[in-house]
Length: 496
Ligand code: SF4
Image 1 (tube, helix red, strand yellow):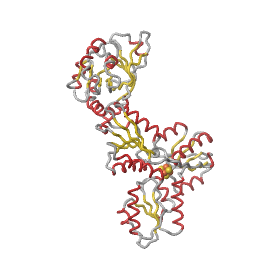
Image 2 (cartoon, rainbow, N blue to C red; image 1 turned 180 degrees about the horizontal axis):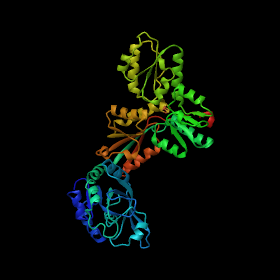
Image 3 (cartoon, rainbow, N blue to C red; image 1 turned 45 degrees about the vertical axis):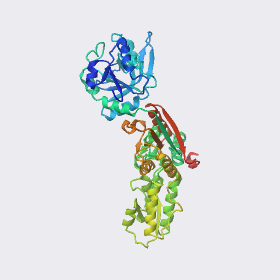
Image 4 (cartoon, rainbow, N blue to C red; image 1 turned 90 degrees about the vertical axis):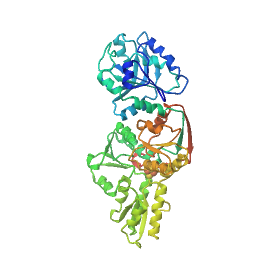
């Protein structure tokens, strides 16, 4: 049977899923009889998956949809729900099935007799009815991984499951085995190495607090130009509180309260905000980004040509370039430095985006110094403390991990750099927005998984990833802290 024991209630369902499927039967006594077969693997760690069709109890379900059980229920004599087993792996299994193109719902599955009165069963709130899973689950040790997947039948009522080859359900069942095998191969005991520091920096905490306080003081809606920080979960939560996110100020009505995001804006945007009628403008630009803007203005006023090391499509860079657009050149690599159309004896100053990879940036600055020996710049580069600390923490654990997971959004620069830093250290690394983006194929064979989060990703998302990993087997958590962060920034006057 290999990596997984696959169970199905009838031979018809077993045949749909291929060879080596153990048929349990679909009533309490025949399922109990299957215990002897299961006992061969009982006490071992071989994961068990149950798959078959099920009768829908919720009218919202469509035939052919899959239900992944989060809980297995039965009913007591009074019609009350009895939770027989919770299946913590449900979300991971569902996510894997969705990646295969299935339409998947996660929720409770109820087990009862074929002829039981449907009234109390429908009233229970379970999504679907089967005649085996809760009883079969009782044969599987509590600490042994178990997944239950049911394909929704296209008929309802007693006898619906008598012919398990109904069209849509059979089509769906036909494609569940491979994702379930992937799940089974990902199940194992493992160590989770947590990098610290990780998650929110002082600039992100300040920006979020500014929006929260603005909502409390000025009332909803509070308009925020662009994502306040680059994280969809943060943006969604604040939107739920009454923040309205816009791309440009012309989408904001006169008299509104407007927050400018943490990445900073070009002076032209600030000027537009000042011109607009009745705006209350609150600037959430991180003070460390504001410092780079200040340096850009200072060097430009002294007549320097500015070279900004950074990614041209990032909002922070757009804002910094806006301080002196006619004097600023953008570079990302030593090759870009060689291609600069500045004279070698030009008066040149350099600046850097705050969220770059430290080692790559050092190479670019070396190239700048080689080409422009008199170049001036900040005493250290402008890469902020939080970016540096998170990268250092990743370097600290990368060599001990089979895989490093970075939690954060694709458009977060410092988050993307964490993935790159890990990969440069020779560690396999993947970026996930949240636990739902975990791919089970990454986890196969990964006994030690590193975990970190970008400066704009909430720690709660890290906790959810840990919970998801723990649904695949026992985990041992080890945190490695490279430094303690104590930075705090004061709030703007309007929200103090
Ligand atoms: S990552 Fe650095 S520059 Fe960006 S908001 Fe955080 S502290 Fe400020």
